[in-house]
Image (cartoon, rainbow, N blue to C red; front, side, top):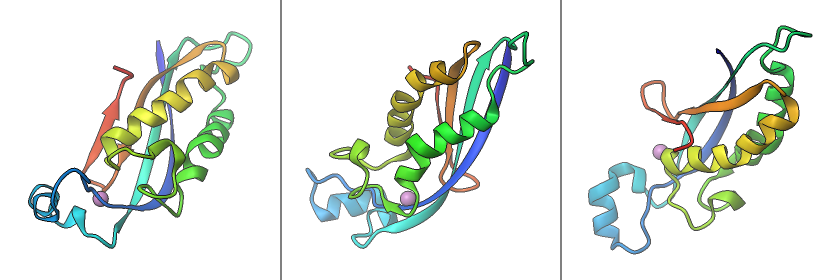
Length: 139
Ligand code: NI
């Protein structure tokens, strides 16, 4: 089994805010991340596909096709956007990295099979800062 990864980048704004809570409780739990007028991050999205190499190409997945898929289906919809307001697949969800990777998985998993006969989605890794990242394996 070989694991193949592609990294794409996007910038986005968000705030962590639970509308069921008072402003004070949001401030207490989320701190500056609850700032009413948003804050931004430079995100790195790393998608890993696993499989055995196609005997005709030696590839598990064509990374150019994976890059195009990630950009068209995910990062173009997030880049320079407000995750709380502008992104249909994040509507009514708390705009955390954890929720974002779950939604990105739902979008990409079925699409990987359309561009690779030999690869399946293994993980979604999302860096919010160089030191903070979340990872999702589909369960
Ligand atoms: Ni943040």
